[in-house]
Amino acid sequence: MTTILDGKALALTLRGKIKEEVEALRKAGHRAPHLAAILVGEDGASKTYVNSKEKDCEYVGFESIVHKLSADTSEEDLLNLIETINNDKNIDGLIVQLPVPKHIDATKIIESIDPEIDVDGFHTLNVGKLTINEDTYISATPFGVVMMLEEYGIETIGKHCVVIGRSNIVGRPMSILMSQGGRDATVTVCHRYTKDIGAFTRMADIVIVAVGIPDFLTADMVKEGATIIDIGITRVDADNKRGYLLKGDVDYEAVKEKSGAITPVPGGVGPMTRYGLLFNTLKSFKKKHNIV
Ligand code: GUN
Image (cartoon, rainbow, N blue to C red):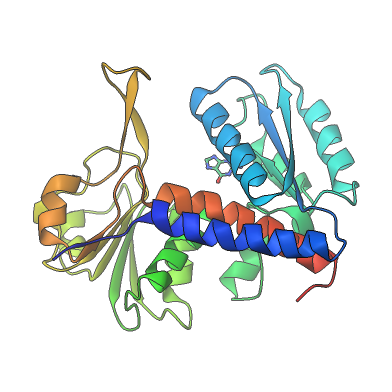
Protein backbone atom coordinates (compact mmCIF):
# COMPACT_ATOMS: atom_id res chain seq x y z
CA MET A 1 0.00 0.00 0.00
CA THR A 2 1.33 3.39 -0.99
CA THR A 3 1.28 6.06 1.71
CA ILE A 4 -0.03 9.38 0.43
CA LEU A 5 2.00 12.07 2.18
CA ASP A 6 -0.88 14.44 2.90
CA GLY A 7 0.79 17.80 3.35
CA LYS A 8 -2.54 19.58 3.48
CA ALA A 9 -3.75 17.65 6.54
CA LEU A 10 -0.37 17.74 8.24
CA ALA A 11 0.06 21.48 7.71
CA LEU A 12 -3.43 22.04 9.11
CA THR A 13 -2.47 20.24 12.32
CA LEU A 14 0.87 22.06 12.58
CA ARG A 15 -0.73 25.44 11.84
CA GLY A 16 -3.21 24.69 14.62
CA LYS A 17 -0.28 24.31 17.03
CA ILE A 18 1.11 27.69 16.00
CA LYS A 19 -2.33 29.24 16.47
CA GLU A 20 -2.50 27.82 20.00
CA GLU A 21 0.99 29.11 20.76
CA VAL A 22 0.07 32.59 19.54
CA GLU A 23 -3.07 32.55 21.69
CA ALA A 24 -0.94 31.66 24.73
CA LEU A 25 1.55 34.43 23.90
CA ARG A 26 -1.25 36.97 23.58
CA LYS A 27 -2.74 35.85 26.91
CA ALA A 28 0.69 36.38 28.47
CA GLY A 29 0.59 39.98 27.26
CA HIS A 30 2.75 39.79 24.14
CA ARG A 31 1.95 41.48 20.85
CA ALA A 32 1.20 39.28 17.84
CA PRO A 33 4.11 38.09 15.64
CA HIS A 34 4.25 40.27 12.53
CA LEU A 35 5.22 39.31 8.96
CA ALA A 36 5.86 41.88 6.23
CA ALA A 37 5.82 40.89 2.56
CA ILE A 38 6.84 42.92 -0.47
CA LEU A 39 5.37 42.11 -3.86
CA VAL A 40 6.75 43.94 -6.87
CA GLY A 41 4.75 43.72 -10.08
CA GLU A 42 1.78 41.75 -11.31
CA ASP A 43 2.96 38.14 -11.63
CA GLY A 44 -0.18 36.01 -11.20
CA ALA A 45 1.44 33.12 -9.33
CA SER A 46 3.31 35.51 -7.00
CA LYS A 47 0.07 37.34 -6.19
CA THR A 48 -1.59 34.01 -5.32
CA TYR A 49 1.33 32.96 -3.10
CA VAL A 50 1.38 36.27 -1.24
CA ASN A 51 -2.41 36.15 -0.74
CA SER A 52 -2.06 32.66 0.74
CA LYS A 53 0.70 33.81 3.09
CA GLU A 54 -1.51 36.69 4.23
CA LYS A 55 -4.43 34.31 4.86
CA ASP A 56 -2.20 31.91 6.80
CA CYS A 57 -1.02 34.75 9.04
CA GLU A 58 -4.59 35.74 9.77
CA TYR A 59 -5.50 32.13 10.58
CA VAL A 60 -2.78 31.71 13.20
CA GLY A 61 -3.23 35.19 14.69
CA PHE A 62 -0.17 36.90 13.20
CA GLU A 63 -0.24 40.48 12.00
CA SER A 64 0.75 40.84 8.37
CA ILE A 65 1.32 43.66 5.96
CA VAL A 66 1.78 43.35 2.21
CA HIS A 67 3.53 46.16 0.36
CA LYS A 68 2.31 45.97 -3.23
CA LEU A 69 4.66 47.90 -5.50
CA SER A 70 4.29 48.57 -9.21
CA ALA A 71 6.46 46.66 -11.69
CA ASP A 72 8.45 49.81 -12.52
CA THR A 73 9.50 50.44 -8.89
CA SER A 74 13.18 51.37 -8.82
CA GLU A 75 15.75 49.23 -7.05
CA GLU A 76 16.58 52.21 -4.86
CA ASP A 77 12.97 52.65 -3.71
CA LEU A 78 12.76 48.95 -2.93
CA LEU A 79 16.03 49.07 -0.95
CA ASN A 80 14.72 52.08 1.00
CA LEU A 81 11.52 50.26 1.90
CA ILE A 82 13.52 47.22 3.07
CA GLU A 83 15.69 49.44 5.23
CA THR A 84 12.62 51.01 6.84
CA ILE A 85 11.20 47.56 7.60
CA ASN A 86 14.59 46.31 8.90
CA ASN A 87 14.49 49.14 11.43
CA ASP A 88 10.94 48.49 12.58
CA LYS A 89 11.26 46.60 15.87
CA ASN A 90 7.67 45.40 15.59
CA ILE A 91 8.32 43.40 12.43
CA ASP A 92 9.56 39.84 12.97
CA GLY A 93 9.77 38.62 9.39
CA LEU A 94 10.34 40.20 6.00
CA ILE A 95 10.03 38.47 2.65
CA VAL A 96 10.39 39.88 -0.84
CA GLN A 97 8.40 37.66 -3.16
CA LEU A 98 10.54 36.33 -6.02
CA PRO A 99 10.94 36.75 -8.89
CA VAL A 100 11.42 40.53 -8.90
CA PRO A 101 11.32 42.44 -12.23
CA LYS A 102 14.46 42.14 -14.37
CA HIS A 103 15.75 45.67 -13.71
CA ILE A 104 16.09 44.78 -10.01
CA ASP A 105 19.07 42.76 -8.78
CA ALA A 106 17.48 39.97 -6.70
CA THR A 107 20.74 39.09 -4.94
CA LYS A 108 21.26 42.68 -3.84
CA ILE A 109 17.69 42.77 -2.53
CA ILE A 110 18.04 39.54 -0.55
CA GLU A 111 21.36 40.69 0.92
CA SER A 112 19.77 43.95 2.09
CA ILE A 113 17.28 42.13 4.33
CA ASP A 114 18.36 41.97 7.98
CA PRO A 115 19.35 38.28 8.44
CA GLU A 116 17.53 38.31 11.81
CA ILE A 117 14.18 38.82 10.04
CA ASP A 118 15.03 36.93 6.82
CA VAL A 119 12.36 34.31 7.48
CA ASP A 120 12.74 32.97 3.91
CA GLY A 121 16.28 31.97 4.89
CA PHE A 122 17.66 33.29 1.58
CA HIS A 123 20.36 35.66 2.94
CA THR A 124 23.93 34.35 2.50
CA LEU A 125 24.46 34.46 6.26
CA ASN A 126 21.50 32.16 6.85
CA VAL A 127 22.45 29.90 3.94
CA GLY A 128 25.98 29.71 5.38
CA LYS A 129 24.63 28.75 8.80
CA LEU A 130 22.49 26.05 7.23
CA THR A 131 25.55 24.69 5.43
CA ILE A 132 27.51 24.27 8.66
CA ASN A 133 24.47 23.02 10.58
CA GLU A 134 24.07 26.06 12.82
CA ASP A 135 20.66 27.19 13.99
CA THR A 136 19.09 29.40 11.31
CA TYR A 137 15.96 30.03 9.25
CA ILE A 138 15.70 27.09 6.89
CA SER A 139 13.96 28.17 3.69
CA ALA A 140 10.34 27.18 3.73
CA THR A 141 10.15 24.45 1.09
CA PRO A 142 13.14 22.35 2.21
CA PHE A 143 12.00 22.87 5.80
CA GLY A 144 8.49 21.66 4.90
CA VAL A 145 9.89 18.55 3.22
CA VAL A 146 12.11 17.51 6.14
CA MET A 147 9.21 18.12 8.54
CA MET A 148 6.97 15.93 6.42
CA LEU A 149 9.54 13.09 6.26
CA GLU A 150 9.96 13.32 10.03
CA GLU A 151 6.24 13.45 10.83
CA TYR A 152 5.52 10.45 8.60
CA GLY A 153 8.44 8.53 10.11
CA ILE A 154 10.21 8.03 6.77
CA GLU A 155 13.62 6.53 7.51
CA THR A 156 16.49 8.59 6.06
CA ILE A 157 19.61 7.32 7.87
CA GLY A 158 21.88 5.53 5.41
CA LYS A 159 19.28 5.81 2.64
CA HIS A 160 20.15 6.97 -0.84
CA CYS A 161 18.40 10.24 -1.61
CA VAL A 162 18.44 11.70 -5.10
CA VAL A 163 17.63 15.41 -5.34
CA ILE A 164 16.84 16.63 -8.86
CA GLY A 165 17.44 20.38 -9.10
CA ARG A 166 20.10 22.60 -7.52
CA SER A 167 18.43 26.00 -7.14
CA ASN A 168 19.56 28.24 -4.30
CA ILE A 169 16.18 28.19 -2.62
CA VAL A 170 15.09 24.57 -3.05
CA GLY A 171 17.41 21.88 -4.50
CA ARG A 172 20.68 23.04 -2.94
CA PRO A 173 19.43 23.48 0.66
CA MET A 174 17.39 20.29 0.28
CA SER A 175 20.50 18.28 -0.58
CA ILE A 176 22.44 19.80 2.33
CA LEU A 177 19.66 19.07 4.83
CA MET A 178 19.28 15.46 3.73
CA SER A 179 22.97 14.71 4.22
CA GLN A 180 23.22 16.41 7.63
CA GLY A 181 23.61 14.58 10.92
CA GLY A 182 20.23 13.37 12.15
CA ARG A 183 19.01 12.69 8.61
CA ASP A 184 22.25 11.10 7.42
CA ALA A 185 21.16 10.22 3.91
CA THR A 186 23.66 9.59 1.12
CA VAL A 187 22.76 12.31 -1.34
CA THR A 188 23.15 12.52 -5.10
CA VAL A 189 22.32 15.84 -6.76
CA CYS A 190 21.14 15.64 -10.37
CA HIS A 191 20.66 18.64 -12.66
CA ARG A 192 20.23 19.68 -16.27
CA TYR A 193 23.67 18.36 -17.25
CA THR A 194 23.30 14.98 -15.53
CA LYS A 195 23.41 12.17 -18.07
CA ASP A 196 20.69 9.55 -17.64
CA ILE A 197 18.96 10.82 -14.49
CA GLY A 198 16.90 7.61 -14.42
CA ALA A 199 20.06 5.58 -13.72
CA PHE A 200 20.39 7.51 -10.44
CA THR A 201 16.72 7.68 -9.46
CA ARG A 202 16.29 3.94 -9.98
CA MET A 203 18.86 3.42 -7.19
CA ALA A 204 17.20 5.92 -4.84
CA ASP A 205 15.24 5.17 -1.68
CA ILE A 206 14.05 8.78 -1.65
CA VAL A 207 13.62 10.97 -4.75
CA ILE A 208 13.06 14.71 -4.33
CA VAL A 209 12.17 16.46 -7.59
CA ALA A 210 12.28 20.22 -8.07
CA VAL A 211 12.65 20.95 -11.77
CA GLY A 212 9.37 22.63 -12.73
CA ILE A 213 8.68 20.27 -15.65
CA PRO A 214 5.29 18.50 -15.43
CA ASP A 215 5.50 14.69 -15.38
CA PHE A 216 9.31 14.76 -15.48
CA LEU A 217 9.68 11.73 -13.18
CA THR A 218 8.07 8.70 -14.77
CA ALA A 219 7.36 5.25 -13.32
CA ASP A 220 10.29 3.61 -15.15
CA MET A 221 12.65 5.97 -13.29
CA VAL A 222 11.54 4.82 -9.84
CA LYS A 223 12.51 1.91 -7.61
CA GLU A 224 9.70 -0.20 -6.14
CA GLY A 225 8.80 1.13 -2.67
CA ALA A 226 10.71 4.44 -2.93
CA THR A 227 9.55 7.66 -1.27
CA ILE A 228 8.75 10.34 -3.84
CA ILE A 229 8.66 14.03 -2.94
CA ASP A 230 7.29 16.30 -5.66
CA ILE A 231 8.22 19.96 -5.24
CA GLY A 232 7.15 21.02 -8.74
CA ILE A 233 4.11 23.21 -9.15
CA THR A 234 3.52 24.38 -12.71
CA ARG A 235 0.43 26.10 -14.02
CA VAL A 236 -0.81 24.43 -17.20
CA ASP A 237 -3.65 25.89 -19.27
CA ALA A 238 -6.95 24.14 -18.65
CA ASP A 239 -10.56 24.58 -19.61
CA ASN A 240 -11.77 25.28 -16.07
CA LYS A 241 -12.89 28.29 -14.00
CA ARG A 242 -9.34 29.32 -13.11
CA GLY A 243 -8.01 28.71 -16.60
CA TYR A 244 -5.19 26.50 -15.33
CA LEU A 245 -4.35 23.30 -13.46
CA LEU A 246 -1.44 22.77 -11.08
CA LYS A 247 0.91 20.01 -12.21
CA GLY A 248 3.78 18.49 -10.29
CA ASP A 249 7.09 17.16 -11.61
CA VAL A 250 5.96 13.56 -11.08
CA ASP A 251 3.72 11.43 -13.30
CA TYR A 252 1.64 10.91 -10.16
CA GLU A 253 -0.87 8.22 -11.14
CA ALA A 254 1.76 5.88 -12.60
CA VAL A 255 4.50 6.54 -10.03
CA LYS A 256 2.03 6.14 -7.13
CA GLU A 257 1.54 2.47 -8.09
CA LYS A 258 5.25 1.77 -7.67
CA SER A 259 6.24 4.03 -4.79
CA GLY A 260 6.05 3.34 -1.06
CA ALA A 261 5.09 6.91 -0.23
CA ILE A 262 4.36 9.92 -2.42
CA THR A 263 3.28 13.55 -2.18
CA PRO A 264 0.35 14.69 -4.34
CA VAL A 265 0.25 18.04 -6.19
CA PRO A 266 -1.57 20.05 -5.03
CA GLY A 267 -1.85 19.14 -1.34
CA GLY A 268 1.64 17.79 -0.72
CA VAL A 269 4.71 19.99 -0.32
CA GLY A 270 2.88 23.30 -1.02
CA PRO A 271 0.96 23.51 2.28
CA MET A 272 4.09 22.44 4.17
CA THR A 273 6.01 25.30 2.55
CA ARG A 274 3.37 27.72 3.81
CA TYR A 275 3.75 26.23 7.28
CA GLY A 276 7.54 26.72 7.08
CA LEU A 277 7.16 30.47 6.73
CA LEU A 278 4.84 30.67 9.75
CA PHE A 279 7.29 28.57 11.76
CA ASN A 280 10.20 30.86 10.89
CA THR A 281 8.23 34.01 11.69
CA LEU A 282 7.26 32.67 15.09
CA LYS A 283 10.89 31.61 15.64
CA SER A 284 12.06 35.17 14.92
CA PHE A 285 9.43 36.59 17.26
CA LYS A 286 10.47 34.24 20.08
CA LYS A 287 14.15 35.04 19.55
CA LYS A 288 13.43 38.76 19.78
CA HIS A 289 11.50 38.29 23.00
CA ASN A 290 13.84 35.69 24.52
CA ILE A 291 11.14 33.07 24.62
CA VAL A 292 12.42 29.48 24.47
N1 GUN B 1 9.16 32.63 -4.96
C1 GUN B 1 8.96 31.28 -5.05
N2 GUN B 1 9.08 30.72 -3.82
C2 GUN B 1 9.35 31.71 -2.95
C3 GUN B 1 9.56 31.75 -1.55
O1 GUN B 1 9.54 30.73 -0.85
N3 GUN B 1 9.81 32.97 -1.03
C4 GUN B 1 9.87 34.10 -1.78
N4 GUN B 1 10.15 35.24 -1.17
N5 GUN B 1 9.67 34.10 -3.09
C5 GUN B 1 9.40 32.91 -3.67
